[in-house]
Amino acid sequence: MDVEPVTVVHAYGVVRTDAVLDLPPTGIGGAGIAVLDAPPVSAVFSILPDRWFGADSWRHHAEDPEWLAAVATEHQRVLGALIRDTDVLPLRLPAMYRDELHLREYLRVEGPLLHAVLESLRDHLEWSVHLYFVGLPEEHTRARPTTGADYLRRKSRALADRQEAQANRERLVQNAYATLADLSRQSVVNRPQDSAVSGRNEPMLLNSAHLVSRRHERLFFTAVEEAAAKLAPNGITVEVTGPWPPYNFVELGAETLAGQQ
Amino acid sequence: MTVERIPSGEDVALVDLVDRLIGGGVVLTGDVVLSLAGVDLVYVGLRLVLAPAHEAGPVLRAGARP
Image 1 (tube, chains in turn blue, cyan):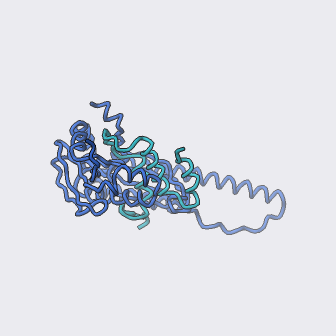
Image 2 (cartoon, helix red, strand yellow):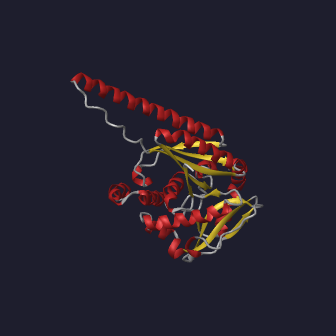
Image 3 (cartoon, chains in turn blue, purple):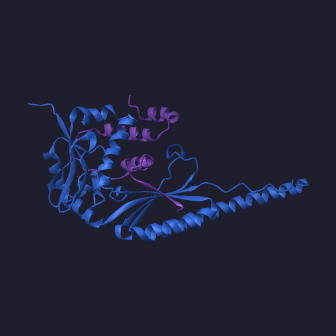
């Protein structure tokens, strides 16, 4: 007999079973947060009303930015609290299970691989680095050209200057990335965010993610500051977001996991 | 300080978060709760989180299922 599910299990992330956790008091929708052990790994989860957060809700809200943003933000808030104390494998949304038994079963089957990945990421966090070209102050307009030839000469020089400046910027951005990548365990360059979505008008020159050891965080940030000082005179500003759980470094899809079984 | 540091909990980091939820993280699947099409739609929705109002139209149409 089929019984309508009343609750659904939402998992936030996977941790080592022996990890010391400081759980935030509430998760999505104000629900409590609990830990499900399937040694050597455990999942941090909430039991949510199926009515509000079950499969039908996800389908219903699949194109509802406000609802998704709220759930995503809450999901991240919980992970953000957990990564302060331990390593966490973040789950991609929707991370929903019928009940604890099902979640435990997946943890049991995929546990060895999840544990291996957690070990490989031990004591590392992810940071994002964004470089923006904010431009340089306008040059003073020089005296008006006296002849047509003078005008063309100036125009061609201005174009050459612009091209040189752009090549110079590309070099600087590459150098900055290389320096930060040297201090990171792993780095990836993601597609720059469109200015329409980043909320900034300036073009993004670099959108990179770095897996940085907690011990090297200060070193990393010193390097970021140094890079920023070099970039500023060229009209480039630096923004760092984080720390994040290592989303960019745990791309374990269903296929990868299944392939390991 | 020349570097702008944005904690991952800030609203402005939402774009970064959505980028991650779409492109990264562990997929611990097996429990077929959402059909594949359903998951696709969620990602359309997450992209919409990022899209300013005037761009929402085309994105929405692209993700619409007959």
